[in-house]
Amino acid sequence: MAIHVFPLHEGSYSVDSSKKFVPFIPNVHDAKDRPGSIFIHVQPFLVQLNQTLILFDTGLGYCDDNNDLILHNNIKKVGFNPEDVDLVLMSHLHYDHAGGMVHRVGDKIEALSFPNATYVIQRGEWETAFTSESTSYRTQIFDFVQRNAQLHFIEGTGDLTPQIRYELTGAHCPYHQVFLVDDGESKVFYGADVLPEPEQLMRKFIAKYDFDGRKAMELRNTFGQQAAEENWLCLFYHAKNKAIGRVKYQDDTFTVE
Image (cartoon, rainbow, N blue to C red):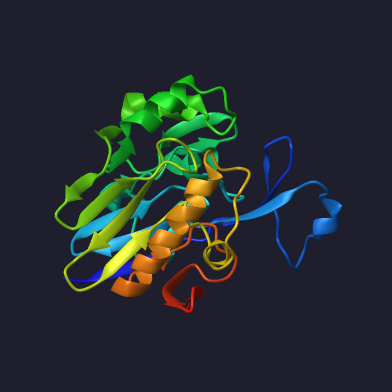
């Protein structure tokens, strides 16, 4: 067996109180021109597990000047086609993770981004997406997905396949989940917004944007220690520099290499 990981960097963005994601190119734009903004980096991952092609989250779904999805372009660059994706594993359905479930041109949804894939979602997160008043959820996307996609709802913690385990963590949002891919030789961990970047593991802090910030901090510590003990390859969705790394833990201190 073999696991191959391909980071699919969609871009960097600033977000202010309007909740709009505005492209930010560090060597072109000046952060001082965007007061009150936070800056995030968006990076879904493509994982090849034997003959199965897995996508972890779908990014914002932004297009290039030709109206082609940036995510599609990135998948093609690593030697695959969007139609090849078998599983789309959704950690949760906030817009920066779920916007790319569909291909939008302007305000119109043209098609499913991954027409041959099964979209795997926590049932509680799906129900929350339709009932929440939060602007982090875009029901137009989910309406289209519901009508056109092959959906597979899961609940709690369990095994999707003998090689893919999902764990309901909550913390970032009530039905957030993480995934561990284990082929018997290697282990790949996708912590999504519970473990979004190496810096959050190395700096113990409580994020105000998390549903339960203290729990999220505790989970980062737990997953970090387990990653170090079991030599997990960790995938960091919001990483600025190091999207993939292995965690080391010594003297109550984490490093990522």
